[in-house]
View 1 (spheres, helix red, strand yellow):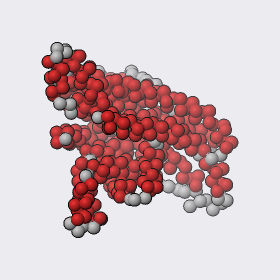
View 2 (cartoon, rainbow over the protein chains, first blue to last red; view 1 turned 90 degrees about the horizontal axis):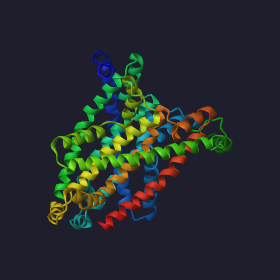
View 3 (cartoon, one colour; view 1 turned 30 degrees about the vertical axis):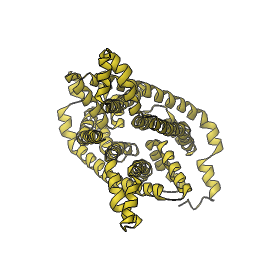
View 4 (cartoon, rainbow over the protein chains, first blue to last red; view 1 turned 60 degrees about the horizontal axis):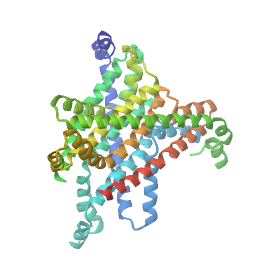
Length: 224
Length: 231
């Protein structure tokens, strides 16, 4: 018990490293705020292309793209970009490598969610909207997409949580987000308390979101 | 974009798809594939089993165990898997609980998968009409018999679509083991490519992941549509 307190919940060390970890937490947060909107916008665009096009080959292309990145661990993608780019004579900053990796990976997940959402809106909605004189684009914007988004809101939230958790892999390329900072602190003080504190901070950041997600899911189930 | 000294495509292939380098290192990558496959199978088996047990415990509707299951599922869904792996591998030795990198990765991913599986199966149980178990009980089946032969078969079927995605993403997370030097595909590929000073092993590793996971992704799509129709 004493060893546990000493090594996991060492308050003296907590006090010492807290400012550093807080800075790491900020990096985690703004990294998420950078990659989530990009993922949502591009995923929605991809889903719209996929559901609205009349060209079969385009739909097949998107499906291949999505399955390709679903089969690829994000960490492998990141390592490939970060360590492969220099061989192309490309000097990619860490942040750019992380952003590109996340973009490629997020695209496919968000587009899958939006595709399911758009397909869940009955086709009568589009027909009715068009018959009132809205153009196709207007109908999508004001009628289809809002309903689709509401239908898949739990999946969207769940995806965002996954992305926030995924920012930890940026620690592997030494981007100073929360996990990285905690590991550096751990090797400085030779005590694992900083990692445990980082875990507690992740919990504080994400538990409310997970709770909210559970409530959303239950509400949806009650309606369905 | 391409290095000005490089004479184009030939240089590109020499760098990224170098046959000599590939010939030297493909065995290592293949061994890494074995570890990844073994770890994935172990995680899926233990994670789904634990998730099922937890869902049944919650279904008992005893107050304290139910609360504990919910807390477990919430915490394990909130923590990034990489953080768990690092805590198990780097922090637990300080309280005399050392484990190998394989065990640490297996344990972390099992707990994460169990949390998600519990939620999905519990969701399946909740969406069954109460009349199902009431009817089963009224025919004289015990609570256990009702759970095992009426509630769970239907709940599991409902849980399949959300679970397939989760299983895929958790098994892909076996790559996180590379961070604690577990010699699975990614770690093997990385050390091979720094030995060779050439990224070909990384490309081989990437190809290995595609070979392993594309069939799984396709299978999950097939499973989802099949299940949807049968419902």
